[in-house]
Image 1 (cartoon, protein in one colour):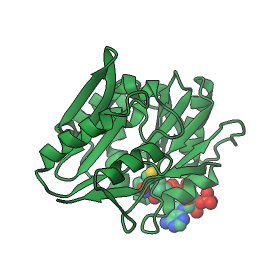
Image 2: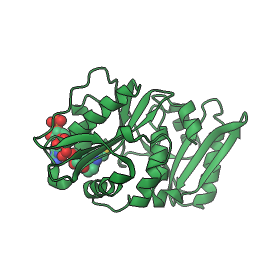
Image 3: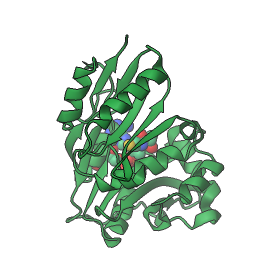
Length: 273
Ligand SMILES: CC(C)(COP(=O)(O)OP(=O)(O)OC[C@H]1O[C@@H](n2cnc3c(N)ncnc32)[C@H](O)[C@@H]1OP(=O)(O)O)[C@@H](O)C(=O)NCCC(=O)NCCS
């Protein structure tokens, strides 16, 4: 899956090797059904179903007929129930195929706004007194790294086991997994970046600040520290996919303030027999 995703990555790709690695490492998504189709002796398409109704899909543009095979596979899984797919609005060929298969746009659905930053001009991070930014130190930081994620997201979806899986999944690099340590020694904020070295593009996924430390510039600072490390690792651009709809505006404010600009958005296409 990552091989295809890396091979065909472009500004019209809904996926990056990093979001596959992040998404596959957590318990519930690890069990979602996956299918792959071969073309010319390698993976030409993959489909990843979040049952009951959501499909993630990547097809090599050189083999567009595989979209139909993936949709048929999803039809069988869904057994006539609601099916939804979220292509980028720039994936015009895929959108046409979805319309031809009976999918229709749902303009009331939440969406993700894809943003990019060319990394040429990056300000230095500024931290409140006593706070320090640094990359994680592997297993020694595991418990704290999970704790700051759980606090930021008010969720226990990410566990020590699942984060250990993240840390051993390509292309994870500890030098691109940044935290801010508070004067008390706890982790206050985090930013994980995934580098696709072939395309020299890093994906930010995820960022968080623990509620007790919010509105002090910590997410901005931890992102800048991680972006500097990304640039030093050879990337020329970074991307991030915050929510674009009005219901969840704060991450968008953060990334635009860092210099990210929108280039595409997801749109939900739905079908029900
Ligand atoms: C989004 C989040 C990371 C912001 O963390 P933070 O440390 O409080 O953010 P900062 O203090 O660095 O502020 C960054 C920008 O967001 C703005 N901002 C932060 N919280 C805000 C709020 N509640 N309302 C409006 N603007 C807000 C700040 O004004 C600042 O804007 P500027 O760059 O234009 O000055 C934090 O709220 C969080 O962890 N949320 C849950 C996880 C999440 O949604 N992560 C991002 C997913 S892509």
